[in-house]
Image 1 (cartoon, one colour):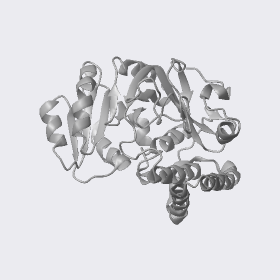
Image 2 (cartoon, rainbow, N blue to C red):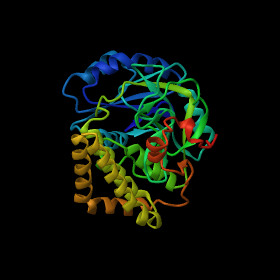
Image 3 (cartoon, rainbow, N blue to C red):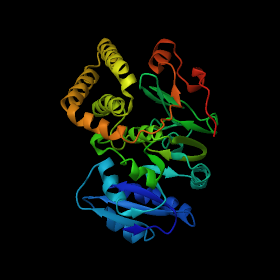
Image 4 (cartoon, rainbow, N blue to C red):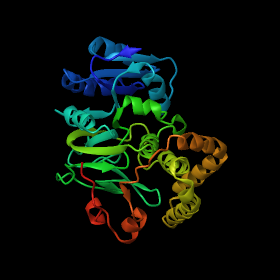
Length: 348
């Protein structure tokens, strides 16, 4: 068991990530002084990643996993060996900025009912733009479709300081996920059966069902390379997008809403597949069909997970849900930016 010097552990899961650590660890460690511990979970790398980090960054504490456990399960196994008040799950392909940590830490210290938060996430290769996964805070619409401030479907905004405030959101990005360790473990952490997409959204939903808030802190900024594990728009990404979104609905919705929303969501997925057909995107259609086949093929497992998740529901926090269809607003009404939606943000 690793006992941290500070109350926060920045935890980087790595598989053959030597080139990323060489690039991003110097600043991460420089910012750590007097603030946080840096911990590397080496996910059974096949190169000399762990040795390189140990020799070049002796401040970093290293947890070695003998078998590659994947993303969520890698964190599940690694965090069992780490004692801290807060975890920050930081993907290896993130660049932090000066004073990125204190605004996030202060937010968590001041609000005990916030279980997780994220900073502003921008694109490493085009630093004026928001990044696809997280951007200016995560939301969900009334039908269970996910989007962000700064990124709705295929439209990614430039940052003009329009999202510098601190607000309540529905989910926080797993790429830079600041969370309370006790709440994380109490609710079972990331669901490793989701594999590599939406695990953090599922966890945030469970946190909200337990009465906690999720937040976005615009005073902190990080940059993400993006698509380094699963490429955006790839058949694999589409598969996990559709399958895991169904799992999230099944696990976390109350029965009274699930019974009518789930069939409608299936119809909407069918419409999405028809749209792909009209555009000749047969790879997308194949991924959608594969996702539904996988979901129903493992339905028994997902139902068991629903029963477990429902045990932790106390006083659900239903805030930060967009009350309309984001699909209709974006594709039919051409509202491509968050500001077009006239959503009333919940300031913190």
